[in-house]
Length: 507
Image (cartoon, rainbow, N blue to C red):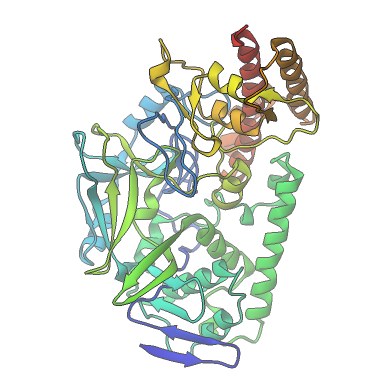
């Protein structure tokens, strides 16, 4: 263990601590297609993207909150999700990644079992290479040694692994000067930039498969015009504030008279913005045990970061203590067909604004999206849940398929979100009155329509714009337009859900 103290704090490099930085290939260095960012699989994205979902009672989501959503057919609907025909066409266009992508990891003890990395029009994903029968226990599909990662502890003293930060390097002072509570992204970005600058570092090779500045969906790199396309001033202002925070950090830590070994890591603010954006979109939080010490760390994990997002993930991750190996495992109780995509759930309980800020994607079927209602109208919670065969606590809602004579194809993640975000009341001693429920439902529909009317464009306008302009525009512009389309689709879904609720109220 090597320890370096400064006046501000101490940075410690240990045989296994953790400092995983961001992947910042030089602009234009990516070998992949121009869509590189986290989004919905079958949607926008590169590596870490989000996929459609079909969540049933038998499988709940991972994270701080759990949830289940019903099976919903993929469809375009101006949301960025694909129709079944489009999805099939995309699968036909997938190509297995070139041998070098595997070779550079295999010679460093990375292993993949029964899965393939494939590149398509929407980016890179991980797919089953063969049929996998239903398993009673989790099955390992990837093994990634700690030596390939960039890892840093979440709290002081800063612990790194692997120890590639030379003693006395100016980055020590920059990392020590960061706020321990809020600047985790700066620390990861610094370590990533250093890894990319070092000869024979694995990340120099791996960065060739990551998005460059022009290909990234990170809103930190968005122009003001692209931020305006969000049609969400609150989110746009959040991005502006964060962008200023990053630029200020670069200005103060990379002055014009910086020494060359520091200056070449981030010659301009865009390079540092890019690195921080990678940290936002590809960081994993884990609790790892090394020897007798357990610590919470932030990590950049190659290969695992190619797993796309799903609200019903097929995979999860775990730490193997004995040989410092991260395992990606296929969750038990699933039947996987050849060509099925392997996915992770990045986190639960977050609205589309959060996904858009961190990853550059959104979903009209996000079961955790929210709408702010300002009126006094409320519907009866138990009655609403019963109308759509939803069961469980609000943070664990799922579609009870066994209670339905015929599966309700209308119920999807947006209906789950509606149950959570609509104003409701519940009193076990008081019955609801259908006439009052209908009046409240109509009032809530009016509020949803008011939200839609506040947008300067309609959903149909956005669809035409996207279809005519998307190929000419940047990935960030595309993500912004898709975000506002998803918002409008969600609001329309709530209106339709309330229509069905009024029809299904039991007299």
